Image 1: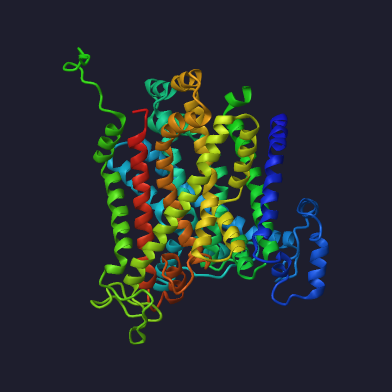
Image 2: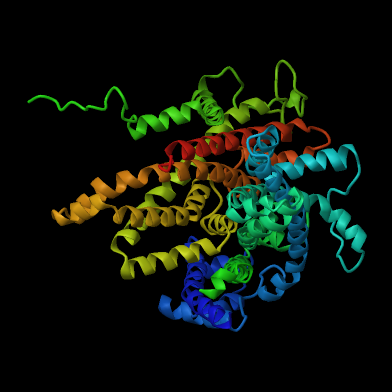
Length: 314
Length: 292
């Protein structure tokens, strides 16, 4: 397993380098002199000079890239123009909020998506299957920011059951924290639930046709045991991999969800950075999500090997 | 020369050509047809927008600010008295345009790159594949937001950003399909008779990889429409006062208590058109599936 992980990490290195080149290239998309734009509206001459020096703007582009990448390797992704904080520190501050949202969304998605997928596969061709499929397709088609707006309208404005905004850290008041996060987590979880339902259904359909399920039934085992112990356990192998790969979707969904429910997380950070023209923050976020996504990919491969012993034997 | 008579013609008729079979399957799928009808409806509405008897999308009526739906304004009016129905009709243009143009960008850049990787293999494949992986590593919307931020907020830049973000899916698909086609006997034969690279790609590979590309393009239009709405919602797409469904929702969220209709209808429109493309894409996938 260690050898496998080491190989995967080595293979990922060129991809990480390419991501860093993209992120570096982003600043060259800015019209005009990137440093003037990056220095913000005040355009403090000292700051401009410092930035020019730091990014070696008088050197050729490859040297500029190497200087930038060298800083990034040491954890220096630049300074936020708005808060004057190091970008990495800022990301580290906001990330726990988004992780809480993402974990809650994932729990909701798993609780809805997997049972719905199992039921849909088990009742294939019946009205239950049809309803589950239509609901999943609707879940994939509904823009989650609109769903969020509609839920605020119904649950907060009309019924007054849950707050429409306001974040309370989990460590401060766990119950209130969950109360404020449950609606955004549901919004974020629906699209993921739809994807999970579709994957679970297709995995269950192929497992239900297999010989060992037929054997289990022939042995006279109860249907529930066949379904959960024999079929679902095997069908979950590809589903777990999919869950790991849904990380990107969760992060992207979080951008909009945090915006609607004014949650001070990673997603809100990127949108605020865009509007404050805080480009170092935008670059830092793209670089960090890219690297995290590669890490999640490696984790997905590892999970697949752990869950599927035949892969490990190979 | 007499035509050869197939002795089995009456007893065991040959199956219809693949294209007809696909159409037959598509025609028999109610969900695919429903998807097609929804898409067609929005397409017609978007194209006929200038001819429809509704007020102009930027025409303000200060005596009818945030008016609830009525006979004069079936979907109500917005915060400066503009007709919500009219803005939705014109907004359909922006949404469909963004969906189609960004997917065209993704297809026109991604398919040749993918074909090149699958056809030439070796170093070209390695470089293109690493490039694709790097692009895929940034979540679609975050990449689109970053590109739109650096390119500047506008509908055109949003389309470019969405197109570039969607490109890796097509590179991967075209690469995999090209590699599959390359193992077919007829490609081997074509190679044996000395057909050049361009002839091989144009006559043998491209026609065979088009069906899955069409399916993926249809499904990606759905994603692109949501992405455009999301970017416009964040203020990075269509700029006011030009109408767009995402931008309408952005304003509507500030008037939820006073004018909920401002948020209701644009959202339903996005949902319906995306559902339409998803149903259409699923239907096309089933119809064009060569395994059946």
